Amino acid sequence: MILVGNCIVAQSGGPTSVINSSLCGVIQEALKHKEITGIYGARNGILGIINDNLVDLGKEDPIEVEFLKNTPSSILGSCRYKLKAPGEGEDYNKILATFKKYNIRYFFYIGGNDSMDTADKLNKFINDSGHEIKIIGIPKTIDNDLVETDHCPGFGSAAKFIATSLSEIYKDATVYPSDQITIIEIMGRNAGWLTAASAIPTLTGEGPDLVYVPEVPFHYDHFKEEVSRIQSKKGDVVICASEGIKDVNGIYVAQNETLQCHDSFGHAQLGGVAGALKSMVANLGKKIRVIEFSLLQRCSAHIASATDVEEAYQVGVKAIQSAIEGKSGYMVTILREKQEPYVSSYGLAPLSNIANHEKKIPREWINDEGHGVKREVLDYILPLIKGRSEYKEDSLGLPRCSKLKMLSLK
Image 1: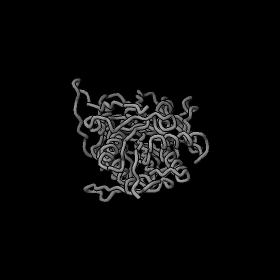
Image 2: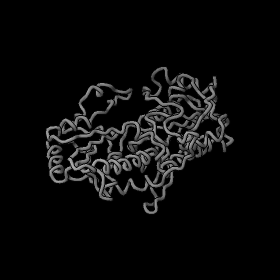
Image 3: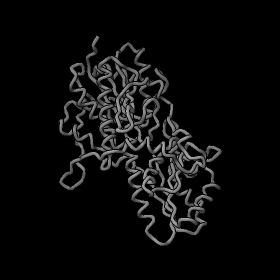
């Protein structure tokens, strides 16, 4: 039986430069299917459904919807909100009430690991609620740590920003005759994919001398010895480190007050590893410059990968098509069909296989010393950063972003 009714799409977790491209794919594809009678957006993720805070995306100007492809951040707003076990707590009753009130038959959640946990819990609850809804997760994360998919939308553009920035930083950090140590902090709690991308410029003789990722323990003495050795040999030293690197005891290298803060999923708020590393080599008496990319690595749509933008769009399209076909309880996945020339396709994987799991860099793709990555990980990343997304400029010469009306349903 064909399911007819309205759909809701929401965004959750950390923003990326292409998460709105997935939203664009959802909206434009949904408009092609008569089974979907209305297209609504939830403000601030699942909270928008709990609080009945919805907007009518079906009434947006098609031109503004098209501009979503090159608009960074989460235009619908985001959240980091953890649902209790399926059916437990008042949240589920509020969600079901919103679904019934607006005759919602399709729900699409764009997000990362925690978002897939939310979608999985909601799918299990809905299956026992008596109200039929198709639920599809749409992948998004710059950390690239979702399992079951070759890679994640958002990662390619962040990796392109980091690789490009490291190429530029290397040139700047090595211009003076005096010795300098440059330490760059890159996002990555438990997976070092983004930090690994910093090594791409080494293929042309530039880039970092040392790369530290969370997949292997960080050794303080080895770090100091390597920095001293490279500095004595070359003069200048460039170091890249994931914010989530830990020592042999599993303790974060960044020991500062921010680690006392946790989100609703129990994740520590990271930051400060570059400063911690700086203090370890201060005794060398050299100029030390610390760089934190911070939000730039996830919101720099002006240098987004064309490959990433297109794949982000297509996972949104695939989500709609899959739901119309009757699929529910799945996340859209990206399959790498061919490496050179790069070709990808799209599939589905059960949400229950993805929620609360993490994909990390294989140990064999990290050098034995634990302070660098091998060619295999670079070959994996390279196709994902290819091409530069085209965008139009506004009257100020800045990238023209989408301006949705966000008309409330209330």
